[in-house]
Length: 106
Length: 356
Image 1 (cartoon, rainbow over the protein chains, first blue to last red):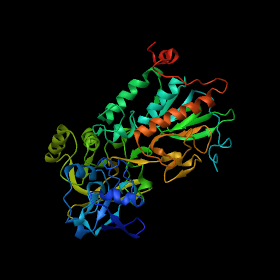
Image 2: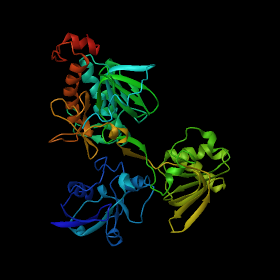
Image 3: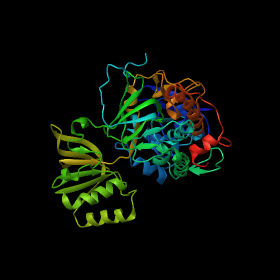
Image 4: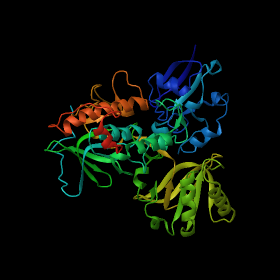
């Protein structure tokens, strides 16, 4: 059992209980937060874009080329932009902090 | 309240050149395509409208090469193969496709039929409407930059419809895929200056295009900037300057009076939101007997509908097609009796399928 801390587009923080092996996108979607994730986790749409907090960003596995290719399609990125369908939650990510990007991927 | 927008009050007569059919299908994804088959077995003629320039919806646009494992009788099939197989299956019913357009307006006529007007001005008259629009229409992804609306379609564009407007201009192109590179190379000889802006020194485009871009940069015919759009500056929709935030964090001003942005596609529900249907979180509520919406004669099938227990699976959409088609028959052919038959044994169905 662990949590991720998600800030929504209105700035409200949500502590979401996480499930080992689930994609972070799936955890966010399961809790009913407005993440689009149109392609359902196939790394093909970039609509599950999140901004990871800097301290957590450096702890994540780096994005694979497939994820970088999709990030290329977003007009506005931060230095800590990731696609949440490409982050698999495990115990090491207990306390992961991130913010939802604008609708449509931002 | 249903029918607020779908009403006679909003009806503008468009008497000429309208296309007639039994079922107007909004969306040519897998579910829209299979609806043609189910309607066709009942002798109903279909016209499909899609925002993309080809059939297949998400299967064709998002994951044409990705394997799908949950289509009955296909242990594995790609999005493109599934699309191709469905097109083959519905061929006997000769559906009409209207691509690269959205249904902009939907009104109910006094004769009980629906009239659909597309963004390209095509008019369809149909006894019934099947909304098979998935998550919505694929549209160019637009940067969320202050005041961008003022510049859009005046000096800031998401596609090239008329290349003349770029001639002798100072152009900035955003993106790193094939569209961005192809248009950069195409317009290069005719512009006054051209700058390509991309977030990193890597392009997802054909090797020949990438090589041509690198050559143009080396010869100083093309400026290449690594960064992202920061702001648009100008008056009355006419661009004068674009600021780009470089990857080093600097703000760079580029003199520009034209811009083209290729940021891939986004999905928007679009005009459907204004049709007076019972919408919740971009989904349309339907019953599970006919998959009819709150407006009689308008059905919603596939990923766009919602009912208790709904699963967004292609196979669920296929089932919904069959039941909606039965209900559509009763509306389109009120005086005919519907007899349920199997394709294995019915000579009538064999004739319709062209296998008699």
